[in-house]
Image (cartoon, rainbow, N blue to C red):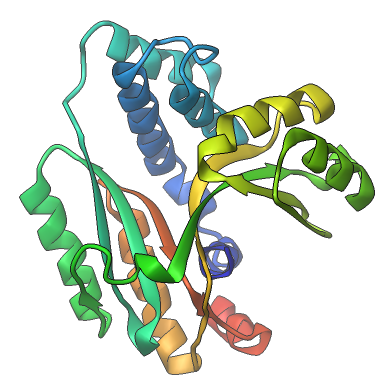
Length: 249
């Protein structure tokens, strides 16, 4: 999805990937532990755990770290986390959905609200912006997985709804409820995907000028840096020209 991808591109240009890797591994580990606690500790028998492990592998999380996170759940270790979704409007009226795993709802809600307020946005009620998004499954493959026709053919056979191919790779979209089945069928045809996860995909977009875009990047970075926040989805659009300026800032 465009908004979050643009944020990641800018963060990559700023060279912050290494600095946040340990934080990223911590978030991935938390999701793995929660997923393992909610079902079987075997990824083959637990769709959510399978997706969490795929996401961890896509970020090159060491196998030992992944296994430790699964073992935490099997051994009854770790805190109990609640899944919480926050919705609101960021700078320029851009819609933002925040997914969190927290052991303290008051702390997380207070922090998320402060991020929105400081950026000139506002946290809304439940379902205040989610109507502008579709909940779908997203499966990603690198360019070397095949050409656009090969991916399209495999996606149709697997029961997917759409394929978006460009120089960065292939993104296959499917119904949210079909994510596990479609990803398994694609894995049999193409090999393991780079990622397979449920996402909120915007149906409308909010173009931002340079000032609003800079504020939005600050909001996204604050959310990304929060230990409790797992995923952020937004419908903002930023031109290449403004992105280049932000990336150099």
